[in-house]
Length: 282
Image (cartoon, rainbow, N blue to C red):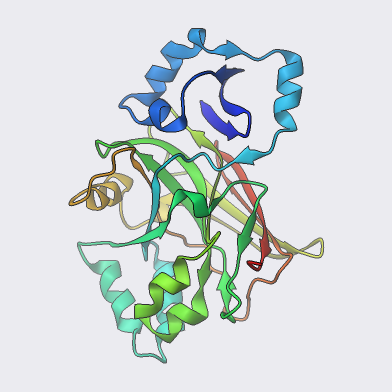
């Protein structure tokens, strides 16, 4: 089952497409057993006609987020650990990433407020004061206010490797800025948790040519999804729930940096494709 947020409202897709009247996304998704709730509610939603479905296809998608904060986990894959160590070796910070990879406590950091999050088809930004920028494709969890994982989406954790590599204390500036996070195209709400065999695939295009492509399975993640969610909710309350990006293993080589005009396409099995064009903030 999938939930889309558009400028015209919320649409739920389950074999057919249904318009959800009179509810905002916070009210709709912040509950236990979200799949069963939506399944039992379909008859009360408005089934879209063929004309409405055609109109929906032409309606821009918004990020499937309400008032939730977006958080992120770092160094959850071995390749991510190695990349962070490479970028930080000159500053003396490389050992921090090696230690957090094997530690009991994961790295968690604040990523974005909802108004700074881009949806699929919208722009993401790179910083003007950064010389080395990459996208980070990540399976992203929606966790309800009780700390239970209810849905999944595609996430892009835009990052400045030059700023983070200069000093680990600069992590907030490397990770948190306008349109540094994108999620979408929808919330995927399955009956059972996602399979470890789930693939994450990323393509970066420049002038109609592919400049990076890679695929990874989430089974390569060192930590479990409930473990990451549990640490995030350990000492914090999220009244409408929270989104949590779970880390990346797809890291372009060190000689690669994003450029204005690049298109980043991230696809996760069963969820869909999050597609964004790279720009500077005006």
